Amino acid sequence: MTTEPRWTKSSHSDNGGNCVEVAANLAPHGTVPVRDSKDPHGPTLAFDISAWSAFVAGIRSGDFTA
Image (cartoon, rainbow, N blue to C red; front, side):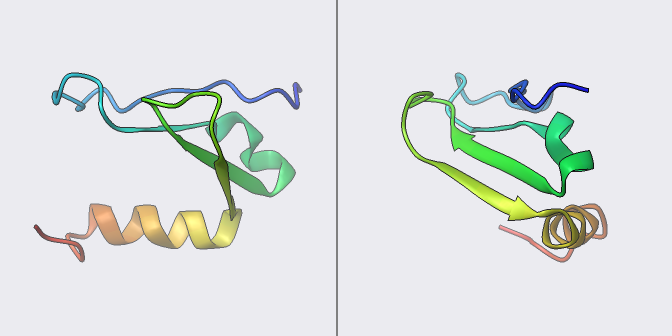
């Protein structure tokens, strides 16, 4: 298993590529890094796997609306 992040954007991103990227391949290491796709060499946020899982579950259940 690699410890280098493999950055991906959502396949639902349709705003010209201005979104966040996630390196979910690091989840088995207990962290999920997130970065701004417009600034790939800029800062990265690292979320604990339990916090990230709760966030994704909230999105899927419709807890966050615009």
